[in-house]
Image (spheres, rainbow, N blue to C red):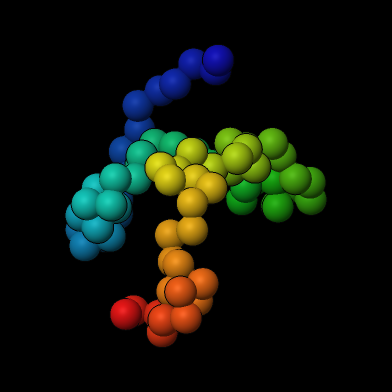
Length: 75
C-alpha cells in the first residue's frame, strides 16, 4: 500500500454535506478522480479501485423491481 498524506481541499459546503450524508469516502473518491484525470491527461488509463467490482450493499438484488412487477417507477 502506498503511503497516504494529509492535504486540504476547498469544496462547496453543500456538496460536502451531501457527500457525507450519502456516506461517500471523500478520500477515496478524491483519489480515484485524481488518478483518472491524470491518466486521461497522460493519454493512458490507469488502474483505480473504480474498475474493481462495486462494493454496494444488496449487490445482485434488483433494487428497482417495478418493471418486473409491472408497476410504474416511483410506485
